[in-house]
Length: 225
Length: 225
DNA sequence: CTTTATAATTGTGTATACAAAGTACGTCTT
DNA sequence: AAGACGTACTTTGTATACACAATTATAAAG
Figure: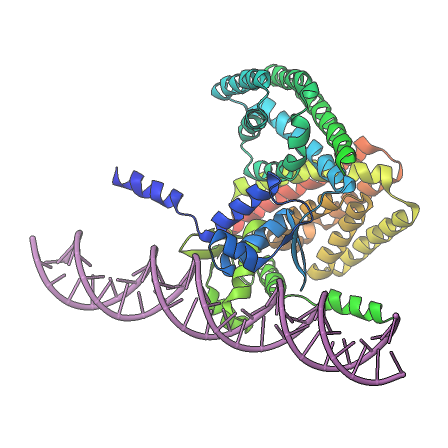
């Protein structure tokens, strides 16, 4: 009983650097901090009400995650995504998501299958309401269920990190309801393949899903830049 | 002229945190800092003759790379690799190395092919001398040529990072000359497949290569722990 | 008016200081 | 003698101060 409370408090405690890290990451992913924008330590420290130290430590992590680029003696800025960069990331994601879905075919337990069904339905449901935030969250949840069923922690971490780097660009096209029905169908295809343990079919469905994402994001990149 | 010198100086300049980062990483990979060993900031700062700040910043990066584990308010320690962890990493590497070699089949230019031939020969040559350091370096070079030919920067970064995490364990079994001839043959198989643009065959050869590594490393893990 | 040099401002890099948390050891009590 | 409590010491986390590098602006000279 006491131990549970302690555990909870332990989980709640986060070093300031991690709070800052999460805050900045969120700001970058939601577009509040725009690509190319300068990140000045003192300025951020003032804004967040902390000293430079946690800011600096958070920046090192963001740098390694690829969300900010540091130029020695010139400071940090929010990473810009180039088309090349996007293609590189998606080329890797294709391979990793294929691996993930194949592993899911082998390893997904019955409870998780129910969860996946629910995630699928939920996604179809929120699509109707046209609320961007709900849609992205439901989408993330669907993919998370698959990822977690692989039981491979490293894979989970890597795919999440790669996916994260495109959230800012995905946001723009998820607003466009033209793609909504296609997304639902693609999810269903992946779901069906996993249920029938058809690894190759599942992998194929994932490739289609990512290819469509790539095409759509690049279209929107060209429009907006 | 002036710009070149400046550029060179820029390249040479490394923030202390990066020097520390490289130093610690090297120490961990070579086994100087052993898995589970505590990393105390003040102690390290004294040893390296710097303040705690660059040490801390280096730690954040090592943490994200997976080489050290941080426990809030308790400090850092060198990450232990469990068998599960190893299998997770290699499962991902299998997928990424397959991708890399397939891309290499498509994209490798003629000059790079010559380079690869050289790397192959060099590896076979140093195997004779039985010098562990030379062998590992030649091995890294061979795989680097393939990786770079993909032209995918993200892929290069990820594979390097994953490979890095096993160097400490690989060292032990590369000493064992029993595996040497097999390694040469496996490299040749990969080389041949790339030359003939046989993507599936190349991927298969890579899988064999990694499977053997996995088996061997796990054997040695069991022996030594 | 343009160019160069110097000074001032801005921002990063490093070190130190202080506060809070955790650990270990010793003592006291049962 | 064993366990629990408390105190002292160690170590991390955060803040601040100082130093150095770079860029920009201003002034002087050509």
